[in-house]
Image (cartoon, rainbow, N blue to C red; front, top):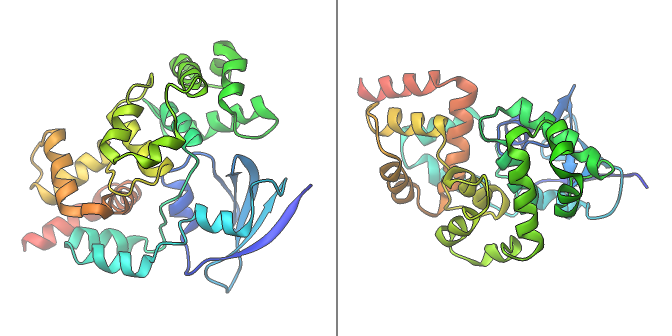
Length: 289
């Protein structure tokens, strides 16, 4: 049964930055609407004209999708006005990153969905990952594939969907989730470092992927994933462009951004990727003048 309802968020949201900037890989823009998955179920989200913060949601099922669930998915319980002020006061780079896209939200995603998507992110790009994910939904009648669906599909079908060398990783990860070797829901109660270590026992999951799952799938807001873009941002903005080893960057991020590190990472990553680092170079020059 199809469902259609309105969601009223506490403030305006930048759907482009939030859904298409690399923290999720289940969404595509179609004109002014966004087609993707909510609670693993196909859905369309459209901004309501002249009503900032109001969204029109259409899904193929009432199951697991409600106005409150959508608001939670968009992290509407967080006071973003207060959060922006806190982070903008840290330094001019955070300030510029947030100014670039103040309506960016940190999504609260399903940990299994997030794990699959970020295993697929290895040596990949956002459009291609999104395409693979949408093909994988066909393994489960247009829903996001469960661990059982992944195992049942087998390596051949996963490769046909575009998973490539990551197909065996997905299958083994699904088996480890199914037999309880890794309890994804249980990781929410662990400190971030411990949760990351457990995630790294899964095949195809290194520190960056584990940190992404911790941040986007477990909502560990002190997690700070460092990929090529974030490394360039940190080195260029905070270390004068010098090459800095990963442990030192992680230590800096944890100390500088504190418990809100994940939010800062999200804004800095979006700023860097969408401006192709040009704005960061400009901000760095301005600070030195």
